[in-house]
Amino acid sequence: MPDLPPLREVVARHGLSASKALGQNFLFDEQLLDRIAAIPGDLAGTRVLEIGPGPGGLTRGLLRAGADVTAIEMDRRCLPALGELEGAFPGRLRVIEGDALTLDHDSLMGGPYAVVANLPYNVGTALLVRWLGGQEWPPRWTSLTLMFQQEVAQRIVAEPGSDAYGRLAVLAQWRAVPRIALKVHRSAFTPPPKVMSAIVHIVPRAMPPGVNARTLGRVTEAAFGQRRKMLRQSLKGVPGALDALASLGIDPQRRAETLSVEDFVAIARELG
Ligand code: SAM
Image 1 (cartoon, rainbow, N blue to C red):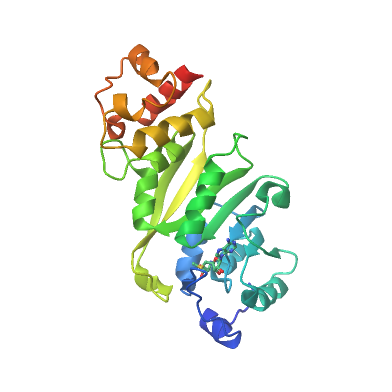
Image 2 (image 1 turned 30 degrees about the vertical axis):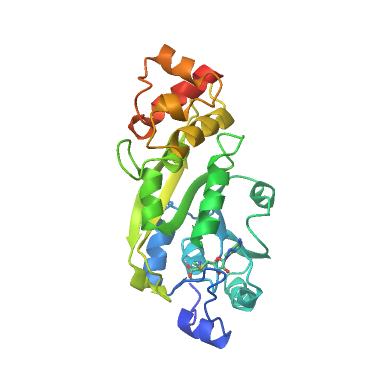
């Protein structure tokens, strides 16, 4: 393994003060970074897409785990530090300057790839919705290992009946399996954010047959858009939805949060 300078020293030498506007909270604990890089499983020889490498802490962990990394970073200030890492792991790291929200990840990566990222909350959620909502299933990505604030992580893995259960849970669970892999204390970051974080690991599974992802999205959007209301009210605007409830034997007086993921899938299937 190449002998790398401490991350704090790299950050100081390149003047990488954390930018609030870019949602920058850096991780410097190399043991923690190696633990995060181990979450997707054995990465030896695996292509990994890392979004938002910043000064490259998690990138180091991924490279030490044997991954071939493509990293997308939009803060140009970080590029020299990442360039040093490219030099330390020749041929194993490709850095792309750009906005991950506008780049086409599949064509960038070619074959199958694992995604690993510690991103600002808004960017992470937008990308998650895009990765989970794709038309192509199984997707080209083989797993997602993503840092979120703990409250969002709980929404992703939430079960029916809980306050956290909503659109994000249905989206993440109807054709994928999410789990909270690691809780990360706020003090692990520089600067520390206000809230606790958690890493979610998501793997795709077979898509239930006869379900249109867009229809399912419309049903959950309507149902949880008015989550305190009964389904007969919240689903009124979705053509055919009330008939679907009747033929499935789902009581229209129930509220969205009492329906299982399978119930939502069945409603979407009825709607065709
Ligand atoms: N991965 C590093 C770590 O764990 O220490 C940095 C984490 S920091 C929370 C998030 C990083 O994502 C920052 O370096 C920021 O510049 C970058 N970033 C934010 N939005 C981005 C976007 N849309 N595309 C690519 N990178 C982005």
